[in-house]
Length: 117
Length: 108
Image (cartoon, rainbow over all chains, first blue to last red; front, side, top):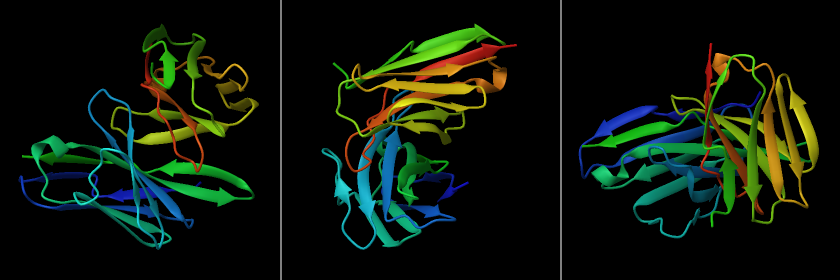
């Protein structure tokens, strides 16, 4: 089945540093990837929609200058949390949209747990 | 009012019991996902359906578009089914709207 990977799976960083998270579709091309954030005991919240070769579409309330998204190829999207602060500590999940045989679905990555000290 | 309401929020059952999780939504949808999130956080898409009923092994998902309601059933539940189950309708362009999730615990 389709697999989406994320790297790193866990990261601890100091406040003020930038953290890059990679999302890769391993056996299919994904023109669209999605980035979600999940705080403890809360549901996933869509942060942005990443389209290959174009600018990402951010959800209301998500700062595009703080959460930089680059979807440079059909198999890779990156999310960079710039100047991270403790309130950015969260679980970040990506998903990749796959279109096959006229049927669309999404495959989710395993997530990246970010802790900002 | 939330766009997606799941019930129950928490469910504890004994191994072997038949489990039902319900989802009501108010958004217009093109399809609906049922997702499973394990304690480590990883998410697996169990079903995507836009009408009727789908079955994978012990899992069954149904949807009634007119009533804006979907259910997830687990037959012969097992402790390894313990997870959070999330209902996620999609509204246009595959944008998912997530329910709060149902935390299921199956005791041996």
